[in-house]
View 1 (tube, one colour):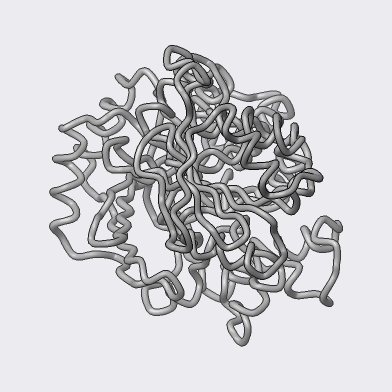
View 2: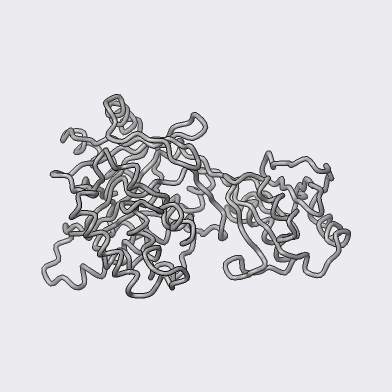
Amino acid sequence: MKIKPFRGIRPPKEIMERVQSRPYDVLNSREARTEAFNNECSLYHIIKPEIDFEEGIDEHEPRVYERAVENFCNFRTRGWLVQDAKEHYYVYAQTMNRRTQYGLVVCAGVEDYMNGKIKKHELTRSDKEEDRMKHVRINNANIEPVFFAYPDVPEIDAIVARHVATATEYDFTAPGDGFRHQFWIINDDADMERITRLFADMPALYIADGHHRSAAAALVGVEKAAQNPTHTGEEEYNYFMAVCFPSSQLTIIDYNRLVRDLNGLTDAEFLQKLAEDFLINEIGSDIFKPCRLHEFSVYLSGKWYILTAKPGSYDDNDPISVLDVTISSRLILDKILGITDLRTDKRIDFVGGIRGLSELKKRVDSGEMRIAIALYPVSMKQLIAIADSGNIMPPKTTWFEPKLRSGLVIHSLE
């Protein structure tokens, strides 16, 4: 794998907490407008620039993208974002529920993405790719990082441990979720060179979160190479910003389903059809979270049910068929409820497990949704096996927490 250090563009310590934000794709325009209220140096003015216009504006209008550039330039002019004098790697640590994961902030190679050495497990949508491409292209920068996993390397762990024993550059608890975020600068040239060499020996990197951002950044790099008659392959646009975590430190959280109707069935008819492929145990009003593979919970009309997939209803030797998200999609959503396209069907919605199963119950009890289906989460081992096999997971399979905060560091393509 080809990686390199870079001259990060970062906020000064004293205003860092005012600049940093959640990622652009985990909140809507209204929420971003609220979070950035009375804060002119919030990164939302760059990654969600529609908040600077009247409510209801199409966030894909040319003037919205242009405002992102204006704000990015203004942030740099006013000293809210300052570029480091030399190239660095950085360490970014996140702590959730007393568990800390340590990532290296690097520039990954566009060529490695294009030739499949940076592996994906989800399909991307062209409209979302184009939106992020416009944002990267017009700002000439990766404003937000992508989230990679890599096979554990003890020597990298040791280098990271030495640096996190020093004073942090940033250290804060994010509002709302209460997760801790810490950031260190790696200044030692020998350590940076060794990190580069150790990554060069890795067979692959794995996209954990940020498939659309990865695709957009890589495609802009390819565009720029084609437009440059003196292209060498060493230009900054040949790389994009990523935070890389050892796979053993990462946990995937369940990604659950809500459906608006029972496809014309009564409760009894729906349960009868479920019984063809699942063992069913009604447990009443107490919330139940699936505890093992091939175990599901369903909330319907004020009652929770434990479902266990019957032997023969899945293939343990197939990396895709064995996934609980595949089993639930095939045997419940498609076969019974008539939902065949998870990407486009308006009858279904998805809730990341960080919101808790109480969120599923609330939305069913409110009458907004008719039924909730909770799944046991995919493992990192399964994700890597699927990516290595060249397969693609079904939509809305993985949910990682904590989310990376944006605005701690930016990578310029110049």
